[in-house]
Amino acid sequence: MPIIQVENLSKIYKVANKTAGIKGTLSHFWQRQYKNIPAVQNVSFSIEPGEIVGFLGANGAGKTTTLKMLTGLIHPSSGQLRVANSTPAHREPAFLKQITLILGQKQQLIWDLPAMDSLRINAAVYGISDAEFHHRVGELTEMLTLSGKLTQAVRKLSLGERMKVEILAALLHRPQVLFLDEPTLGLDVNAQVNVRNFLREYNQRYQATIMLTSHYMADITALCDRVLLIHDGSLVYDGMLNDLLERFAPYREVRLELSTSLTKEQLSVYGEVVDLTDYQVRLSIDRRHLTNTVAKILAELPVSDLAVTDPPVEEIIGKVFDSGSVN
Image (cartoon, rainbow, N blue to C red; front, side):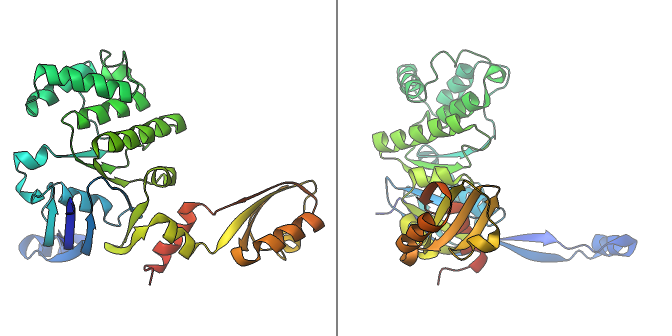
């Protein structure tokens, strides 16, 4: 049975529509007019227990609005949804104990106090006993490599350390469904890797379900086999990440380092020139002709180094958004 079930979910915001100038202001005061802004439109999907699913879309596509409806922070305009066998909008205590929502760089810790004090408040809110509190803090501290950090004032922690403590606080009640909205936003590469490793371990240890949004495609490729793509409020793809890559990337990237510089016109006979900077070249080549083309490049060009890779996931997903559909 799916732990998240969404059917024809929509959210429409009613926004006041005011024209400019004094006349518009007076008219707006006496006879206010409104327009409807659709944020999410007829979205349907289901997620099984223990899945890690990437939820992708451009800014304003409807990702955060969807997450807020799934956690009960806002009510849908229409449609049905069930999370952990509950209706999120009812915000029942049993439901709230099974979920968590982490928003990148949105702080719940008290800035001037040690992190441990904020964790004690969270424990009291969720009715966690002292013995269980110390057990869970110790376990999560080890998983997040935060030893010695919880007794420091939050403001003295680095950004990466603060984000890890925020995650610890959000998971102290051991939720089974994690909604993560840009959890690695602003972190350096090492901190991003640490957060990904932790989320993978948490998922495996507790069989938790994770729904993840991120602009860092490395988060998605490292954690998610399945992705949902939302564009202008509508779901345009629900499937395996590898299938998406195969469908929208029927080419491979060949990166060259040349011993002498060549013009774009000289290189274009081998494939599409994606980027050309001095002696560095990126070519896009049809997968069907890859072997023969690479052999031709090595035979005819002054190549110092060559690497064949898949194109960046950002570019592939960008093509899906540009098309607005995968059909």
